[in-house]
Image (cartoon, rainbow, N blue to C red):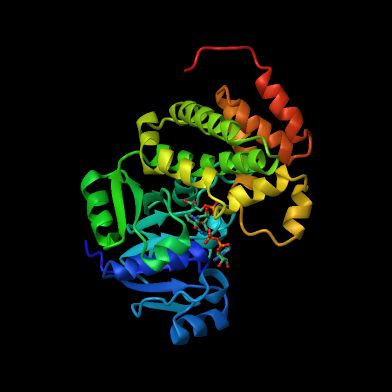
Length: 328
Ligand SMILES: NC(=O)c1ccc[n+]([C@@H]2O[C@H](COP(=O)([O-])OP(=O)(O)OC[C@H]3O[C@@H](n4cnc5c(N)ncnc54)[C@H](O)[C@@H]3O)[C@@H](O)[C@H]2O)c1
Ligand SMILES: O=P(O)(O)OC[C@H](O)CO
């Protein structure tokens, strides 16, 4: 199967960065955006100022408002918009095509992972999940980045990874779609929590304890959902958890910091906060943990804070007062 042309759905930070990475990998890329002025800007100035500032985009990236056939489809819209974005496409574009899912989140209401949404909307599509420590600005600027690309067929996943790999973008192939999707979604929940810990001034020791216990909790969730906990030792697990939980560049961490400083969710959103996927994913993850009978006190605590049922001091006191246990 030819893997020359790429269609990226979603002209935000990540869609534009992945379009840039694919172009740097030698692919011809069409970026589908929703705004005519953005089409003009990308095609004439080769920038996407709103999302990537002055970053110059590769000549092989062109934009349009229409989706056109391509060998590889990359979906790069927020997790809660994936179903609508897929529904707006001609199903023939997706049939028997590799569709790379790059959103990190679980769907409100259905509790679906991104590949479950895809297979619901386009049962003939071939799902792949791309995740790992990767800020859009770094990828677009050509700074060294490594990610995990998970798919069901080992040879085809390696071929797709090779087609997307460039001098500064290195996808590692995996066969654990579930593990990669759950890791990508949950790291945003824990990034909110780490931001909150830092915003509340609870100290670097608390934040590291949180990251370690988050890793253990994430492993329980991945296992319960049918993924492999080994996946968490890699880029999509430890790599992205570390990045997002420790970097002020992360939008989830920033959102959490504002919570830690005492702002409410409504106040943070009203102040123009950027997309923080963990806000929508936290209640979904909590519902999943409860339905699977997984012990997930950190997710539950974050849910209580986001829903306004508890403040940070209360949930921290509650976590510290849990019965002592063995570290497993
Ligand atoms: N920005 C990053 O550094 C980064 C890195 C890795 C993964 N991601 C993930 O990528 C996903 C998208 O994040 P982002 O940073 O691009 O967000 P963003 O807010 O920068 O952009 C989102 C884009 O999606 C478009 N969009 C929304 N609904 C749509 C729809 N129904 N149809 C078509 N387009 C639609 C918006 O117009 C916007 O251009 C998130 O799940 C995020 O976790 C982001
Ligand atoms: O800015 P965030 O918090 O959405 O994180 C972006 C990427 O997921 C980091 O890998």
